[in-house]
Length: 220
Image (cartoon, rainbow, N blue to C red; front, side, top):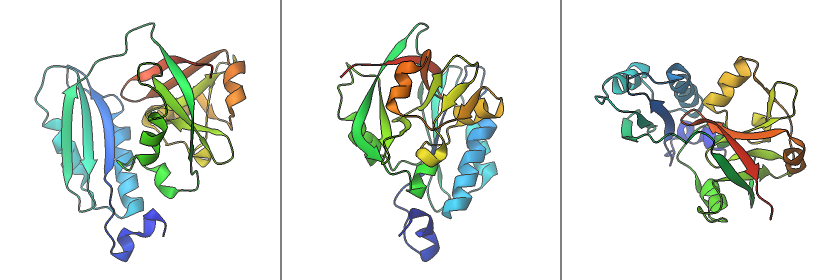
């Protein structure tokens, strides 16, 4: 049974919706509205109860004067949880080392279009490589196309001034940073395969928490 029908048939969801964002020391949250919008849209699609004002109040109630990693959790009954930890930025000049997992992503799974804590496939892909040797692991879909990383979206620079990123149809999560870059015309969706990484002038992975990070694919 598709995950999207579970709640409507009275079955427990078995997962929560999540949003992970960065709260600056001055209290601002980059792309805050986009994060809350995504949670609201996913809640509506999956049948979760969601009170937007409750989510906004939780974010407004954070009392801290340091940069934070903020995670909102939404359960099916509408309960909103909050977790905060100190945010550590990726140092300038950092280049993440990438690898491609043997684990494949099911691009037809409707849950892949929503940010949830149902992350078994990502944990399996991540476990294929040492965290000391590889910073991020990319997943392919069943057709061998690039989909996304375990915690990031993928962006390739082919030298035309616009970044190419895998489409949602390939299995990519509609990330918040990704959506902003698409809306700004700084990125376009494109079907990509592993060999495209080698011909790209530059490779980036990114998410709303960390921004864009330069990367390179490590040889097998």
